[in-house]
Image (cartoon, rainbow, N blue to C red; front, side, top):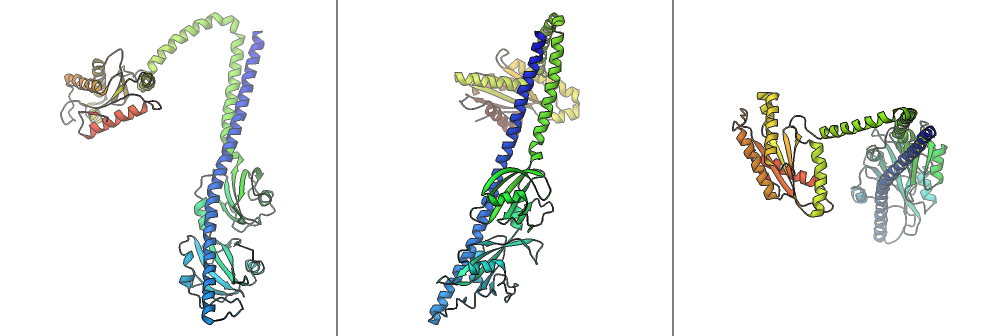
Length: 498
């Protein structure tokens, strides 16, 4: 019966661990989805805002043209009726709405024949014909075309790519009068997307609505303008307004978790693609360690159960010895070996317990932080054995100054000590601090490297009545700040926290 129970327990434990491992995997996946959605929202909001800014600039230029054309018609007394744009076009006034935008390249105005009649950049040719371009034909034939965004194309003047945003210029009666076009440098997307932490083998991609890649971060060899409309992942982007799915990239054949969305009503698709290997790498390591631990534990349990009947008495005796040894080790683990005082672990534990107890009783808890002045100089001049003797002497001073059954004196670290004083107001703690100084003065320890020639200490004192919702950390910070103030004021003194 015991053997069967011994077999059943490891199996149950392994099943519980398997459930936990599965939960860890699900948590890792959900965390990756949340992070991807957050990045998608942040980047998408910024890109959409920039596109809206540029679109408003284009619309403002078109409105300026309409106003100038109306003024010119009023001056001439009659409308020519041909929808021609006014001439000459004042460049500085016309393109003033675009002056405040960043990453915007040149902006040009084309008339109804496709010729450039005005440009924000004087270097752009004034008589180039764009009447055959797709965006121009779209605006000429469709009054409701709205904002058009082109595929990326190289910038002939800089080592970068651009995309063109265009708007139709209508006459007062809705006829086609021309097109206003502004270029946006992909340096904007580089600055925005390349600075986001997405993990190794993960990417952020911006696509046109027809599946053409506008920008990929990191690039990974994929140039802007690449047609990926036939890739299964991109086809899904094109078919749905938003979503999350797992797929394999067409560019590098890496399996990724895709989160994608269309940017408002604009012909743009943004996606964050997180490598599934990156998502599950940490989980696999945890699962391997858990599996190894479960296997070893199961073997140990079986071995122990096989010998349980023969060694039950010996185990009970060994457990008693182990408990005693554990208690001794626990005491040693909270004792400083050099001074015999409590160590930082004991201080932290008792400080938290006293804080909770005194919070219920609305009683004060005080702390004194102590630092031996110029101790490094003492060690350098007198040697570490002499420094250890000073530390032991300081510990004796603390024991003599505090209440032995109530207070706790601990070595905080190095030459720093701390005294915890339960149910002690600030005035009483200051008296204890003065008593510590007096005890040290009686020892009259020489310190050739100190200004006064004797070992001195700086003390910071704080007292608090624990309030609900607070922790003992605030008392420690207050005492430490007071100690810093005492040292700042010249050392060998006591400073109290406010």
